[in-house]
Figure 1: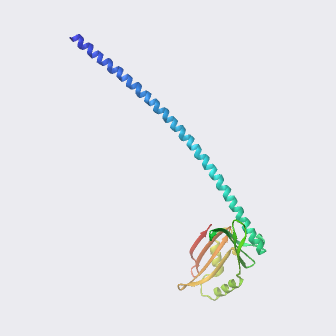
Figure 2 (figure 1 turned 90 degrees about the vertical axis):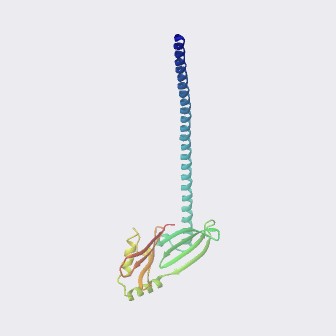
Figure 3 (figure 1 turned 120 degrees about the vertical axis):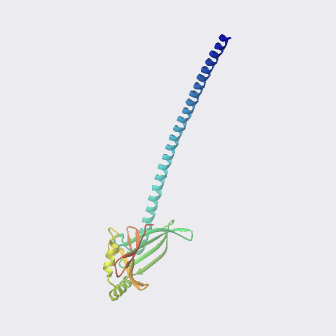
Length: 220
């Protein structure tokens, strides 16, 4: 009986070892399968990343193409307005071209100054046709404003206010500035704008302290 018991114990141990080996092998096989799937997933992710990179590159190219086309259209709209006004681009200042939508139609709004005259055009973005034109002489208004500034009791002169505003826009000169003295809420202030390199800067300057009260940039 003792021999039989010993044999039974040995048989049990042998079966356990074999079972353990089989489990280990199955675990190894499962790990190998999982690793294979992991490698495949990783490879798929890499390929997918390459696809997205490809799409990004194509999108960037298309975006650049659209921007280039838009710039060409803006340049053409500007030339149409300048030609109609009989003004050379070299003689124009405060040039600004923006796109807008008017009654469902895309239009370019073109404005520039030349020889103390302000020109405003609205041009059909599709056909290039001039829709409207507005011409305004501002030399008389400017002269009246200078007289008002001279007669007003303010500590900061018009020229000083212009210098303060120009100090915020590198490269801009006095011909790029329009400014006027205004009296509001019991105080004088200079209100104006600078248009330079297609960007409009609107400002307000305290006429007593010379401090900039408001400053906004429109880069449309």
